[in-house]
Image 1: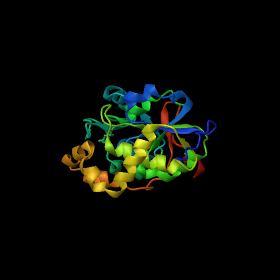
Image 2: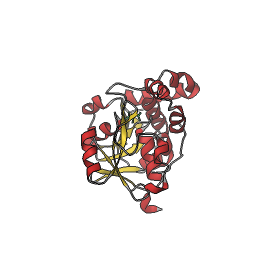
Image 3: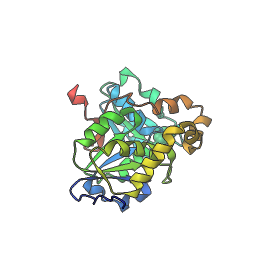
Image 4: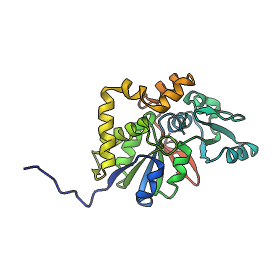
Length: 249
Ligand code: MLT
């Protein structure tokens, strides 16, 4: 007899939105949205906050970013992996390992990550996840007792491997507190378990990994895959990201 335990209605749930194009299929307004863009937006955001950046304004267009530049803000980001001409930074995590950024505000626009943040602007709360902050973020989410929606930024509304694999790593860790109702969560977790044993295979076949390698950015990729390098929790507050843990330092 297969032992099916009835899904408890009381406990909150974890779901995975595999690309921003699917956001409308979920009850975003009833969830904490965790935006994921492992290569490289959410990884770079964690590096920036861990080096004292005060705010990051996620911006949808290059034009809007340039408007912030005219107001005196620093601007960073990329399109198709390459730094935008006229910006202060591209999207390499190493660009944000700069103590001179302490206390600064950066307007940032990226091909997918900042778009995904805007796609879930109606969420109860929005936080940013990457391997760099996986443990502190998981522990914090475990204490929230809210529905969790893991939002993969993907690539131009298509699924990508690295964000889905990271979402699966989060699902596996969140099992401690949450029920899994969504097949998408199980898909992500299964992919993570498979990838954990064949990292090189999965990476080699990731389109964005290939794109970044062609741009000679393999060091960025290696850095973005390291766990717990930057224990911060970027959270949206009044239209920009701040580090939830900064005030506790
Ligand atoms: C994205 O938004 O997909 C990433 O930021 C792309 C990148 O950093 O190359």
